[in-house]
Length: 179
Image (cartoon, rainbow, N blue to C red; front, top):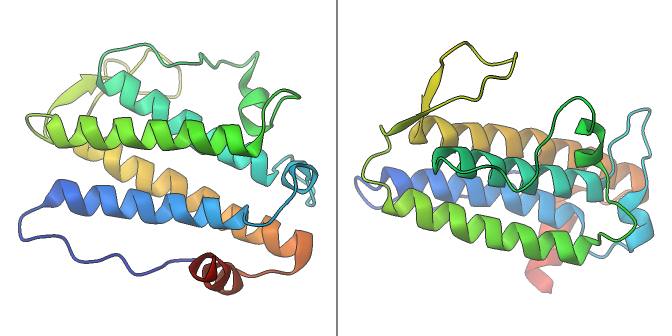
């Protein structure tokens, strides 16, 4: 569910982009409010998605893109052999642990984007088959991509949560504000 994002200070494009990323993170976090670890691992639809798996995925994706932008290796390397693992919590992973990890990732994103000389700065895409050869993207593109990626999965999270216990995004916003 979309909540209101305050208008940026005049000319603060970075602040606006970061606020929209944070707003979408909130949608994923809210979908997990009040659930047990077992509920967060349930896959109530025909697909493989669980709320815990979505949480892990969005945190990992954000960390990966910021690492690439910093010309560093992602914390976790994914390819066809282990791609399925980014959408599920392993036995030793917890929702609380993934939320704490995502909080660290979010702080690093904020620090990096705010300190970059320009949102026009670009970096090369990896040589994966789904990227154009010798492609490059800007930091602005990364921010927009993180908004899109997180928003898509926040929508998935809304559907999964409502399937689990009938709670809608509206109810979860109220729950979040009360708690």
